Image (cartoon, rainbow, N blue to C red; front, side):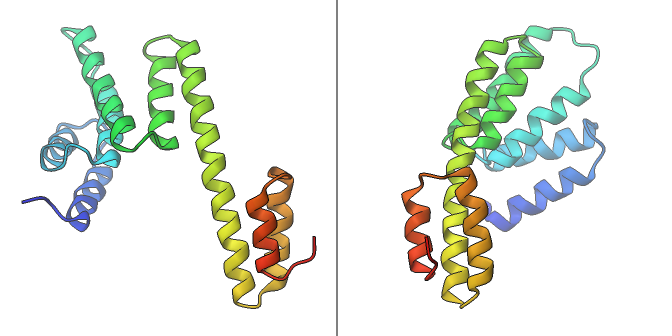
Length: 165
């Protein structure tokens, strides 16, 4: 039986309260990964915890390959969310000393994050407009239009909220 989202979040919260890289944290995160191998927050936290935990490595190449696999799993399972891409980019930059690969991942993360931000601001303008909070909608739309001056979605949201162009 698959764990519920609530159960996964409880395990993740418990792991976050533990000392970074401690044996207890690593065991809890492994339990989380076994219960749900595609749980992106668990994969990302696991990769960071492993990096904090290991100082004397008998086989550094195998260890870093394991961490990289966790990050690849997070990138794939998340459908390339900005958080997962940033985790992989940091790994490529710091551990693999590959700034070129890191740059491409950071660029993709930034592009995806901007898309999410635009969608959030559009939704916020619409929600504020629906509630008659036109001053808040106008303020939000003004801020958003500075970042997204050519956004047709933002223009539509302004109309929906009853704002002037």
